[in-house]
Amino acid sequence: MRKARHRTVAATLLLAGVAGCAQAADEPATLPSPQYLASTGFPPTAATAKTQLAGLKVAWGENWQTYRRTEFGDGWSDDVDAPGGRNGCDTRDDVLRRDLTDMREGDRNPCVVISGTLHDPYTGKKLPYYYRRASQIQTDHVVALGAAWRAGAWAWTAQKRLTYANDLDVLLAADKTANYEKSSKTPDKWKPQNKSFWCEYGRRWTGIKHKYRLTVTAPEKLALQDLLATCP
Image (tube, rainbow, N blue to C red; front, side, top):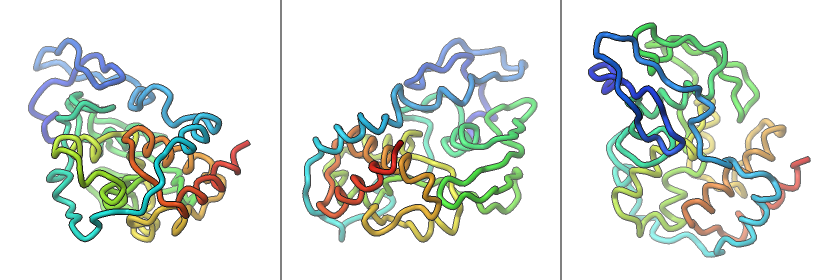
């Protein structure tokens, strides 16, 4: 958002977040539909997720004691090759644009979400959002940074960790209290209160672990199998 106020936003966003032609500085910026703020085929179908889960390496977490949030960069960054990357918008604004309904965007800068409603996936609550007002909405890393670190991210380059932290496939707008309760817990220790989201939660979690070649613990794998078993 801060960057977008001082430069034009790309007219076309490819799935990988590649910018297209720039507009004149005095023209309103335009952005594509939020439905493009995800990788092709993400989240995976239940059948695909089950296949992906079967292929994940099972191992206990490592190096948990060395985790620091700063290992994944200092806040949000648009400078990544991931869905939403390099499109001129703040990562959090991209998440809001994708996940809110009844959304009103800024007149001159559509990166900015003025207002909207989140149908929270974790609790089922209906949460309002207003620009620059206190909100119950936070941006959650589905597979939290700490969980990713234990599952293999400790060995990544700094740029790959930055990409992970800003990959829209990894992120969801969610209820703040639920996000705090979830923290960096794996599905064997925490599941969404909203059981109707269990299938998608299992699909997203598994899809992230597969995409980034992260390991799963044995209890985590069993919990994911249970989540995927709820899929129709």
